[in-house]
Length: 115
Image 1 (cartoon, rainbow, N blue to C red):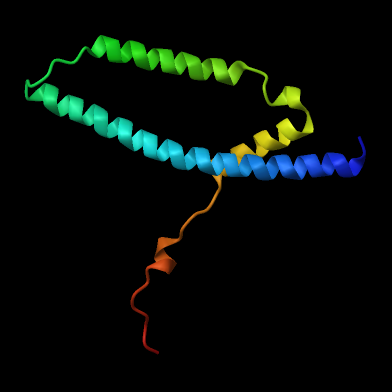
Image 2 (image 1 turned 45 degrees about the horizontal axis):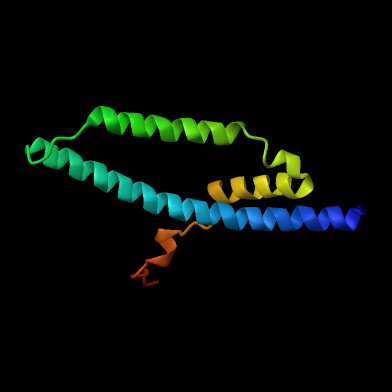
């Protein structure tokens, strides 16, 4: 493969990875809010004595999810795909950490100083 092909795969993988990272961050935020509200409702209803929650079952389910996530981190998916996989992983990490940030101080300034 020539140098242009490697550069194209690298840039394309990084761009696709960034898009995937941004999407993962948005979906994860929504899912975490939903899970938090669900667990909060369980706590409130259990506190009022309206339901009985099998907390050991909840803990078992969470431990299965955590062990599955640990298994995913130990697999060699990205590095076995070469330049596209490595640049895609870098783009995904960039999308998860950086992404678009809204500066609320500048965007929602309703009043300005009179000079």
